[in-house]
Image (cartoon, rainbow, N blue to C red; front, side, top):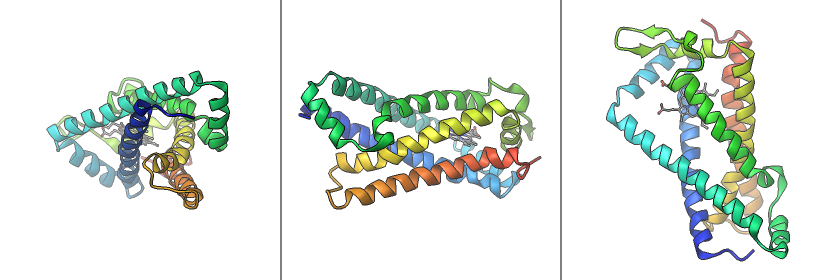
Length: 222
Ligand code: HEM
């Protein structure tokens, strides 16, 4: 497909914002993993984050901007690809490989709705107000109780597992794609990048999914 200069620019920005987002998802998993150590560990981690004050808001704004740009450019590029001539579409099909690659816009859309639901669940705290227990008298929430209580119902567990499967699909192709866009891969290294991409997606899937599943299994409990 003949890429216009502006779509090349947008692809590069998508790659850069993709790096920012996937870095966040990896760091967030590391932070959440402190639940495996125990209630004190995850609560101390949450308290540390909240104590950063204005930096938290700067970080949130950067993340929000990266998320919004990634979504808008992703939609634009998908529409451009669809509007391309039949011949160039055939070429695009040949270049793309696998289910993850073909469904990036769908998995991206599901992740968007997952993140909105997740923020309403744990950050804005409106979907399940019954799961919150205060910690101390500084207006903090007991994050350990919130997580364990938050995965008591079947619905949130199903929503998280489904959302995380789509995250696996998206990241599993996205990392390989960004290496290609940034010119960091060639014909020889591309399959290795593909495997690396799938591996990162898989580690994220197993790491994240194990939190609700261990809670459901009663291995993480109050
Ligand atoms: C089992 C999976 C997950 C669990 C248990 C989890 C847990 C949490 C918790 C407890 C918070 C609130 C922290 C606090 O206010 O103290 C939070 C915030 C957040 N999570 Fe997750 N998370 C999960 C997966 C994800 C994924 C896959 C994404 C992104 C795709 C994500 C994105 C966010 C964002 C953007 C915030 C808001 C951060 C902020 O307040 O600045 N989470 N998560």
